[in-house]
Length: 219
Length: 219
Image (cartoon, rainbow over the protein chains, first blue to last red):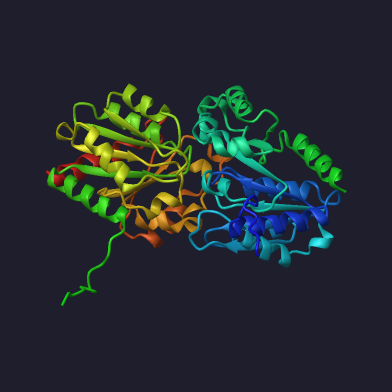
């Protein structure tokens, strides 16, 4: 007589790939961060600057997700890190199976930290686990301070919030940073929040410190 | 013997609702614009300013799409126009059936122009026709000038591109407006492009002129 274990959760194909990615990264002790934001919040600029500034301190590889073009992977490689471009050809988010293939193309053994730059979209990528260690949500001050209230899911699920472009003149921007911090913490008590400007470098050291400490804890 | 008409295109449920909305709007000679952009490009600010500045010249109603909250509908109603809020509860785009219900809630006979503000997302809303007359894509200069190349579908399908926040200081923004115009026109030869600042009012008159002329042609 065969026995069916009805207590066992049936995984979707995406969840199965995500679980396999997560196991691979855990076995090899790699920190993997999935960056999610709207188009134009500055993800690629943040990653390229982080790679340049942390050269010699931590070995970083990047998986670039875009609907079309390899503009972002080119920018990352120019900063000195290996990068793999995934083109989703219209799809609004990366899938765990795409990340699984990309992980095979990266020189994983020579890396400590993997950045995944998801497709620019504050909504859909939130619902697809990739097997990452943590999600990082990026919000540019130019986008306005009502975004945690209007798009709560990603603010609730992320380990880190990077508030970017803080060099833009406050007089021309409707952005109350204390409101954003308070509304984000209402959704996610333990989230780390770093106000930064990837352009001027302001605030980046606190972000680097968190990154290096978090990667060290895995080793 | 029954006969199957294999030449007839089978419409999806969304396409059927979109067709019904389109017929209703055409019969009643209403111009209906579907605004699509990333979160924080300034859609609501543009709509609220347009409503205030064109008061007495054209009668505008608004359908507001958001994942959660009625922040945007409140802002629109404060500007003096009737507004209906649709909350998608997590969905990344408006559907034509939601717009169909919203059109029933608006005082349609007393309006000339309907603005639909889609969910903040440059990707998914592009694929769902709502029955609108035209799509309008909004791009803020803070988002960067590579967006037509990276998200071509919405630039190819739109009747108008509004390039917003042109008051932000050029020295702090990587945005070559001529490059954006050229790349957009490569995808869409006939698109109207208006560089504007909904904050300072710069460039808004050209947009208003297009809006009033286009609405007039329907009557």
